[in-house]
Image 1 (cartoon, rainbow, N blue to C red):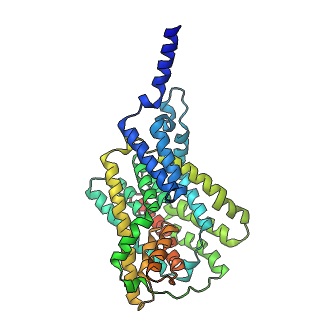
Image 2 (cartoon, helix red, strand yellow; image 1 turned 45 degrees about the vertical axis):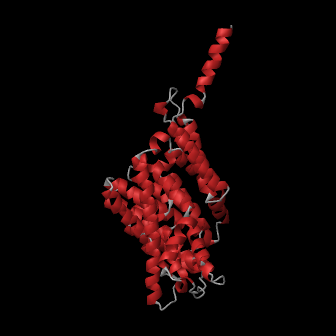
Image 3 (spheres, rainbow, N blue to C red; image 1 turned 180 degrees about the vertical axis):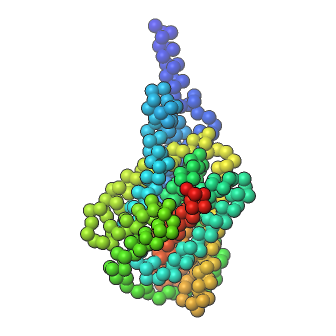
Amino acid sequence: MWSYIGDTMGNLLHQTAFFNLTWGNYLMIAIACVFLYLAIAKEYEPLLLLPIAFGMLLVNIYPDIMASPEETSNGIGGLLHYFYLMDEWSILPSLIFLGVGAMTDFSPLIANPISFLLGAAAQFGIFGAYLMAILLGFNDKAAAAVSIIGGADGPTSIFLAGKLGQTGLMGPIAVAAYSYMALVPIIQPPVMKLLTTKKERAIKMQTLRPVSKLERILFPIIVTIVVCMILPTTAPLVGMLMLGNLFRESGVVRQLTETASNALMYIVVILLGTSVGATTSAEAFLNVSTIKIVILGLVAFVFGTAAGVLFGKLLCIVTKGKINPLIGSAGVSAVPMAARVSQKVGAEEDPTNFLLMHAMGPNVAGVIGTAVAAGVFMAIFGI
């Protein structure tokens, strides 16, 4: 009797995670807790960082939650494995773009088309990081998947990694991309201040012209036709982004707009965030490649910010002081955080300076620019 009880208790004890985790799992659990702290206490992109951190926590306590059907005894995969399949199939990133489009006002970009150039300039970090990744030993497709982190656009990073067959790197790439998105207020200001003068940061820009409803309706249609005709592979991202925006601007499908920007958006964020976090098991995450990816992502992000600011300085000279260079940093795509950072840094020099709407132009242009950069890579590799 006592022997049976002892054996049963011993079996139960050895089934606990304490007897099955490695030091790597404990390290990843600690990292997940740090991310949870940043999401909850510091409010760094909590809608993204919190589910990612919790997915990271779950997979390092119970790895089978990401197991495929082939890896289990009963042929049923883990819960987050099925969430993750929707990442691999590009479903969730595309739906994120649908929601972003439904929430985004493209009026600042329409009112000031020069913002397209600032958004394009900020993509320099992507192609600079691509060359660096090649030098660090990544193959061409892996280098492209890693470099897109420079756009500070998590869904595009996941989308491109899946399309290029780099699912093994998707976890570190996605975590790096979303982490840098969350850390925009910390990473960008030093770069912006280093490359600009007090006088430049204090430049006040003219109020943007009003944009008509017809312009706002035609914009998503024209962008879809032009971009997708040139780079058809961008249709899942650009098409969904512009469809969501057309829902918003048409004014005739309010229910679809509300669903795409609220209920659907938040459901997708939960699925995508937890599944991305669950790709960061200790075995997959703690290696030299991950360190390289994190470093390359930071370099790409800094280069992109710097390129946007420097191009903004050039436009400032060309327009004889009508463009504040700070808005160029918003071209890295992290909507709307990067635009808010431009506003914050400008307001530090002059509290009456209002740059937010001007910065939103390059910011939303950066979203399109990063999707286009992903399309360029797919076209290069014949995807």
